[in-house]
Length: 163
Image 1 (cartoon, one colour):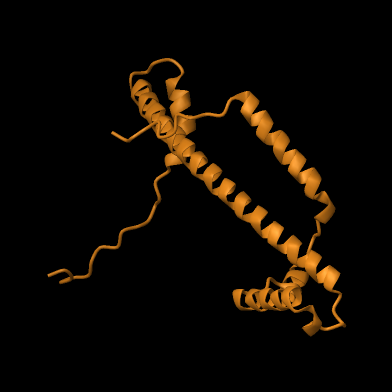
Image 2: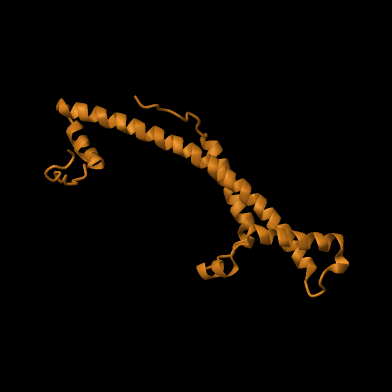
């Protein structure tokens, strides 16, 4: 017998509304930085790898601790703003990724519970259809399409095979 009801925790309607409102507020707040990159833009600008992040961090450290060594050709005010934004966005992304993982895990358990309950209902429907109980044959015929057997022909082994 399969394990069922792996996740009996459910958000209330008020909690769902609060979460949706919070997401709407987040989307509204972040709309100012909403930039759509094309696939070509993504390839062109990409994301700096870990080695290059270390390089940027080191340049920032030098600019902060020894500004006299910094290039006058760099807009250091903008560099500092970009650096702070990148760090803030990275922290937000990590939190959103964590929320995504937790929501996905909870959804996975609810999906499993739904599927197991649906299988139980299908088995009951199959039984009742076999007893000619009214309505169950139609329901069974409608549900059995989800369990279509694959028609893969079995080739008999050649003479002497398997010996």
